[in-house]
Length: 304
Image (cartoon, rainbow, N blue to C red; front, side):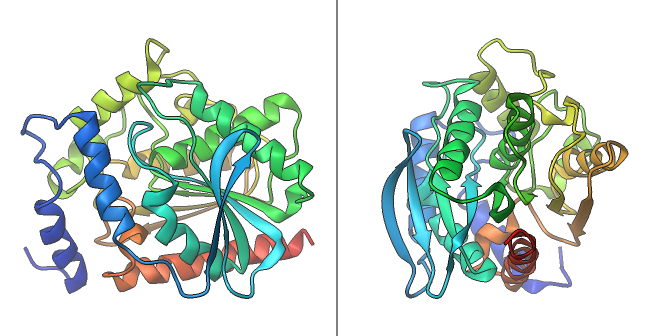
């Protein structure tokens, strides 16, 4: 198949050698984690970015400070990986680029993973880290919460949990290819199966089960698509047109707008799940990071 963007075709070829086909036996969690770590850690950080291991409210994290960053503004970043794999280290390269584009610091969180720590551990960790950021002197108006895939869903769940606790909303929310519906009811879960080289319903169902550990799939903090979204911070939602989570994002945008939330949804043509992760090989990934960085920078500047 040919693509208007030839780089996305090259990325698909790379992924064909890394991701098991949808009909193949699922690798063990340990192998998935090891493979993800090896790939993510192989991508370099931008020059001049300081990385400091910290504890953010008792949760391990990286404080990432790009050259020239405004240290009074910050991104709380929640990595993807289905709540089961991934880490701050796998996503450090992308988080550093996003912080660099935004001109802010980033707190890149190593929240607890399932199956060792199922729901609500990830939500609890993200809320604790946000509370710690407030205690450290970052005002809510100068924080943006961002995340990809499961981390995108966690971004929304965290905002909903903050509202329930009476804590202030951040300046903005930036979910990338967010997994917002663990009931897997979105039309794209079947319509886009053939075009998505990363996600498939079987893999999502496995990770959903490990994360939920018996909790209902439509629980609002598990699947924030079903939460009361009123009063949440403004959102920029990025999603690829060729991924099974397309309708997770479009339905989120629709429900958030109906709840009175300021929403900007962008479905990028030909793009796949979390394409900014592949920024080192994909100009469209770099453009998405630059665009999101400008949006984040504008949100935190308005809150200064």
